Every structure is written in structure tokens, then in C-alpha cells.
Image (cartoon, rainbow, N blue to C red):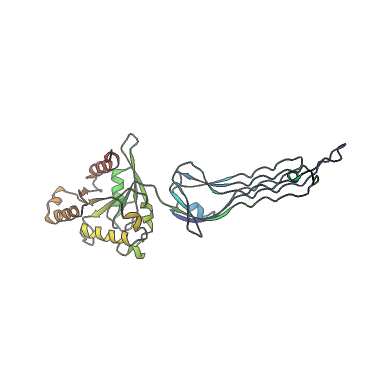
Length: 340
């Protein structure tokens, strides 16, 4: 199924049923009086988060959703049936905005918790409601009120604890593969990752971490180069940014140069305010042999990050699964032991 993280839909709650104008007519009861019943209330529209969904692609097929109208009132003071409410399932982590004003209406982050989006119309009143000592045969009724109609913009923001950032081919997908059971596509060409990928690191005893991998950033990504920076929205909820830096990149950029490039793109993107205060963990990837760490250039790079207050630097060979345990242990300490 194609990954879609934005969609616009229209929801309409049901209208209330009109009241009934009726009079009681039975043998031997010449003045039975009014007995028109009220209509039924219109159905509401709810949104509910569903963990089985991971894309908004279904809303590109169906864009209009309407709850059932309330039924008309009937004689003998019978109330019309209330309209059936409509519940729309959306992926966990979906933010719902008013399409015209941009106002945030709700954030679907709790599984199975219905959120009222559009309220159904109030029912109309039957003529029995208007009987009085001065008006014994009223013919007055009221129609049901219309239900709310809203145009909504849905925006999916994945729920993850750790976000992976790096240049294309830095080894982000390989990193997720070596620390979790996720199996995202891995290949030796840029932009292997075209949509966000999730992986879960299991520590046992209910201690799990969700890692999110997004397409790589290149210079000028904030201007729309490459795949742009639109996927950064999926890192907005993360508590830690994991910078995966390629020690053997084709352009021969040092790890410090890669880091500065990535930071420029983050700071110039529309999501800069969401990223500025997040803690950072630096990972040097593709360190296949311990002897590589002894080179002067390598030590110089490590020292550069330590002076920036970004140490200690972790070393990883995602392809050979070297350093994966150290990375997992570091993440465990940051999330489950620090501050306890």
C-alpha cells in the first residue's frame, strides 16, 4: 500500500429529524388533541486511532463522510429514531486541522479513544410540544437542525522515540535492521528509503523503543532538492535524534562536514522549531575495523564532536552488526535509566 501522510476530507454530521404534526383521532374521543412526536437527533462523527493503519492512502479514495440523519417524528407521540453515529479510523499519530483556518482540532495519540469531530443536529419538535391552555390544537412544529460540516486536513506524524538523520546511503536503514526486527530495503544507491520506516528495539519487561528512519537529506533539501524536508514532520514527536554519519561516503565528506550540512538543513526547514531542543547522539557508521579508530584523522573527528559537547561518539558497522549492542545499551540508558 502506498504511503500517504497528508489528506483532506469533508465530514458531515447527521441532521436532526423534523417534528411531526399529528392529532389523536379515535372513536368516541372527539377532541383527542395534538400527538405529534419529536424527530430523532442526527448522528455524530467521531475519529478513532487504529494501530493497524499506517497510512492515510484510504482517504484519497473516499474524501466525504456523513453520519445518518435522525428520523422524522410520528403520531401517537412517537419519537423518531436517532441517526447512527459514524466512526472514522485513522492511523495512530494523526493530527487533525481545520482546512480553512489551520487550527489544530485534535491529536489522535490514544488507541481506541473516540474523539467527537462533528456534532449531530438537534431534533425537531412535534406539535404535542406546543399544546397549552390557550392553544389546544397547535399545528406548529420545528424542523431538525443541520449537523456540523467540517473540511479537515489530516497529517500523519509517526509516534517514535528516536529519529534517524543522515545523508543518503549513510546506513540509516541498515542501522534499524541491525538493532531491531524491522527489514527496510537496503541497497547501494542513494534514496533507497523513500518513505518513513519504523523499527522496534525490544529490551524486555515492557521496555521498547521505536526508531524512525526518514529519507536522507542532501544539501539544499530545505529548497526542495532531493526528497526535500517534508518527512521531518515524522521526527517531531521523537525524544532523541540519532545522527548517522558515513565514514566512507562517496563524496569524501568528513563526519563533521556531514553533521554541519544536516544541521543547516534542519535549521532552515519549516520544522526547525521542533528540532532545536532535542538531544543528539552521534554515530559513526561503517567503522568495520578497530584499526580505523587509531588514525589521526579519525581521532581528530571524534575530538571535534567532543568539543561541541556531542560526545561520547558511538562507532557502528551496521552491515557487519559491529557496535549494535553498544548502541542499544546507550539508548537504553538514555531512556530507561537516566533521571531515575
